[in-house]
Length: 225
Image 1 (tube, helix red, strand yellow):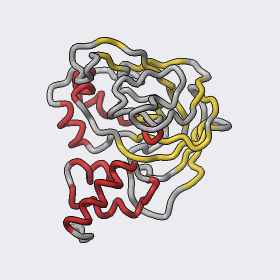
Image 2: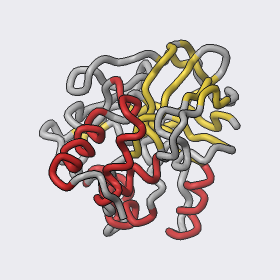
Image 3: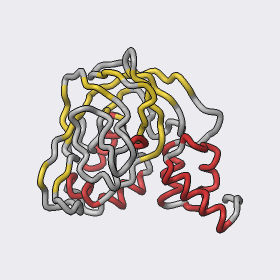
Image 4: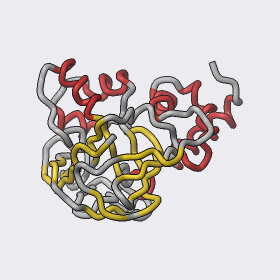
């Protein structure tokens, strides 16, 4: 298991973003590194956890609980076959393109050691937006990406340090529950009846999704299908 590619983006003006300033850091490109990784600060204030990586819409992206975004190369390969076009590392706006890791199958709260120093913790899946669709140039992309249910994983920084392409990734902690990134993604998008199950992940879950799950339980109770 390793980081196949480390990807950073610069702010770029585009026509398809709903960001008021009309710029996005979605177009991320591979870099050699090393790149410093650290907790960026609260959402709305902090941006990316990677030095030199632009996060333009801090209302919805970046911050401590979305400091790093990882996508499996295997998932990009599957999309290549479905879309009939090449997809380069970083094309989904991911910071880490991984190899040998079931990223969407990772448990919420699972911890990865990347290279000798950095430790990251899985928090949630990526919710697709109009900017993502515009960047890919695929009609109906938000719907297709959601239906696929392999969103990649956002991670928070537990221990800062430097990483680079080629660094090994080692799972150093797996929590005692079965809430995967894919399951949490389905719960907050297409299968809301699964929301009560997310409470098992407790405070390791992205705070916004945890709050959504709690409000659902308050309104409908804890029974799930």
